Length: 617
Image (cartoon, rainbow, N blue to C red):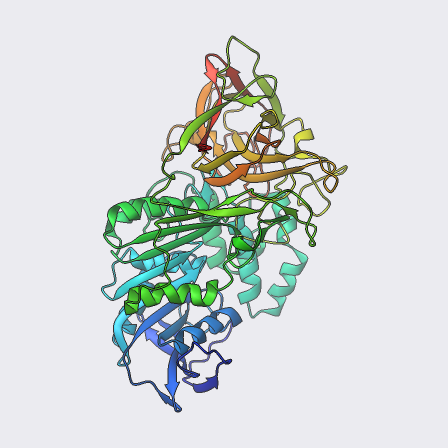
């Protein structure tokens, strides 16, 4: 790990000219070492406004961000300077064991206690007014959520952007039994950034994450992460710990089990349809808005992880309205001014603001992206009032419609080969290039898609992908809300996976002559957890089971002439680890077998996906 210098430095510097900023110069105290309850000290930089070269004497609210990504990073420092220039004390802190902080870092664990101790220390600063607010994205949001669960007395508001998972078992770490490989790519990337050993850095260039993904699962002491036991230990625990037990219910990995303990403070929750926290953010909103007296607001945009200021996701453009240009500065300032200074002006009052994708004409823009467009909608709650939960049934001929299947028809069977998984093309996860990229893409293999193979055909061409789609729509259909697939399945294996993907199918056009098959949301279920998350139960080969797959919620307008499509398969790699079909303990298998997986769609087994339809009127 990097060497640590524990020094105090006092720096004054001028901000760029900003007519609205009442304070032009900022005073910085670097590496204030704040003690935790176990004696470990965490390095914290303090930003304060200056007047005539002297720190402002007024007592001000404190804004805190805790981060594992270096408190001296350009964006976080710019935000700190901006907030300080508008009358706040700002504290930026390196997480335990990282950069200038003491201790040992273990991902997710311990963030609540460290956050609590930091908040209460900052509340004692002589130039603070006793109020502490927090903000941050991704892990920075997770740190806030964990602190809020412990009810620090001086925490007064939080802004959670794309973080604060509701339950690490069903998304972000594992996903209904499957393992989200973004955890592994994060570990490889962070180790490369944080190590000060040049040999380790070179080793990670020789033995890349791309290569190791082809030989999963990892084994203790036999993989590149073994040079950093704290990294290897938490990854292997996540990879092999399948049952939803006390490990997953730990307060630092789970909010569902601890909602009732949470601080009753105003909360703003944000995520994007192509973010790895999309489902958890909505789940947190529903639970907390019901329990807390303080206001809780939800904003969902057309964004990938950390993409609030971008109007595109992947290879699809949503228009300028899709981006929040002032997100890192004025957007947050309005929230904090309202809840820490009592200024209610220029603040959104709707409980729910969501971006509905899909008002565009599908032309190719100047960046070669498909123009999908979209617009914002507001509501009092989620799902939006008036939403009709509508079943769309799967049929043997590949059709998808609202008519329930009749008669006794043959099911659809495909062979799932774990050595040839369906490649991930976009989706809702953290950006982990070069292994995979989040966002919306044409569901066609390319030479830059991990695990794709020539001749790079559409995913629908694969024998292990079942396609069910509507006829071209006679009118626009607005789908906004939670999505669930209820399937009747069987397998020749004792354990396998089933995946579901919702797609907006564009018809061919001059600029996209093969059409454009745009992914919206996807989900997975490892069938040993089909009945309950805390107990594994293998299947009887050939027996029929009813299962439920829950992709993240979504908001999209399927335009007239488009098709609504649902793809069913058994892999989505490397978004999720590949099921070996053997029923061996999770993360410890040594062999794979092919499985014949079956979807039933007859009168007795009406497999369907429930879509939240907003009526045309």
